[in-house]
Length: 119
Image (cartoon, rainbow, N blue to C red; front, side):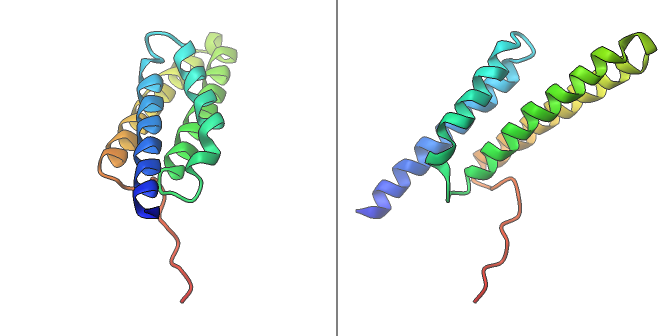
């Protein structure tokens, strides 16, 4: 019985992670979706603890915060032309993280290597 419950929880966690990847991708159309996505990550974070999906939540949260940081840097350096480069590189980086994360999620792979268990 515990296995069925675990499988249902894992399936639910994957659905939430998929939703957040979708919201992050929609960021390029409506910025608020990325904020909604990271709020969902923080609200559901405890539910995915101790599963491989937790690594996707960590990946998504970091994508949001580091992406936001680099966009702010880009805004402050916009007039120096370097901001344009920061915006372009950051956008490519965010797209890469969404695609890589979503593909790993579909393949049931964690985002970070799982440390070897002590025997």
